[in-house]
Image (cartoon, rainbow, N blue to C red; front, side, top):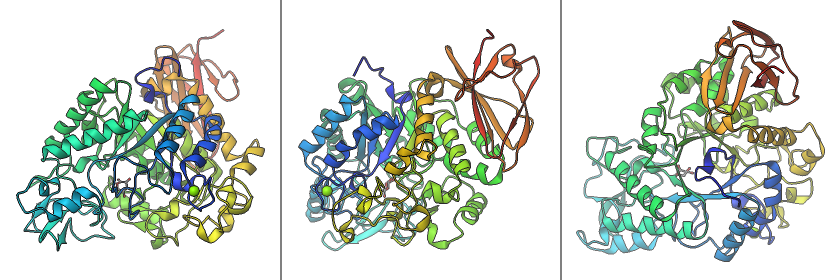
Length: 547
Ligand code: BGC
Ligand code: MG
């Protein structure tokens, strides 16, 4: 790679994928690392610049690999350590970065650390790797996250004759970060993956590392102190590598994961995501502008990660009860679609498979301040399968072609890791990469053009954001601006054509040039700049000096 900037993540377009569902090279029905490596040219051509891989470590797979039993090897189902090294090398050859998971908070109950801990006598240092109690009422202020599956954050262990703490499934005991060997062990895991060439690590479930009586046991000062310790370690040993916080929190709590530029480089903006869906349904801008107004500024070296959908349910934790009821009502009429405090659906089905809405939502994703994270399959508008349990319905195999098994695998269809989507509207015979690649107007080719356009403008990743009054709350308008680049973004959130009147007085004298077509619009004079947008339409304009 040619002299990459240390803050490469600011200009990135991240693609999240599940290796097991991406491409199966050996015909066992499970996607694997060689399969993924074979698809790198597709990803490069799509224009994404970084790949985030869901968990790869050996695991009993009761939480899709977030239940780890060995942090330093590769699950044999997806390949070997050599396959992983070959994959990283091939990705880097193409200028693609690699982001993997650092699941700090918990392990599988099958991890040798837990097996050792449950057998060690109380008070023994081996026991202290996890959080034990004689009283399952301790830390009663902590909410239960997987509320459809668990009633308490404590589970009884017959072997230890004590209760152990778990914020997720009861088969995922939480590590005890008070215990110095745990803190050191996690740094060793981080070193292991960075030494393999990984460019970034997503810190899974990071708000829950410590527990304190009388608190919610989230975002505690001790957790931030440990993150500063990790970051100092990264700065000293792994300059240019990135830490991404998964902290499903309100903006004022989420920004704290950046510290003063001395904790994580990136953090997901969880509260923005449901508000994009709310703005779309209410056909007005306020859910978006209000949450961004409530979002504090972040340190200069840091960046938000933005997303529409991911491998989990669309979480509605960061909205009011009233807004959650609204979103459930509007987006999950079918009670089957609800899970925990969220909605287990992919982007296309959420948006009624409406091409205009998909384009509008993606255009927002690609222009709001932050780095966009795409979820595999959403670039072709893949559907989901509500008959599958938990979150499996949004983790179905990538649909490559109309060939058997959608070109994903040569195994018997019954042996696929997750069944393919066969709902007629989203059937893999029609919704697939090969078919869409041939059609210039397909969602796939549209997405490619969007990514290419975004990549030509530094202001999207690095600029500041100035909101612009559009004369109506049905539209959202803002200018992304950095010293050498400036783009005006306008979105009509409503289903009807709307006349807009933008207050562009700050940019008077400049000429808006539509970015897709290069068409020059009338010069901005002192006051309002009129324009019209069709139903759920959007436009991006460069603001240029007149010729
Ligand atoms: C991941 C989930 C996982 C949970 C427990 C998360 O936040 O995104 O998929 O189930 O952590 O590890
Ligand atoms: Mg395989």
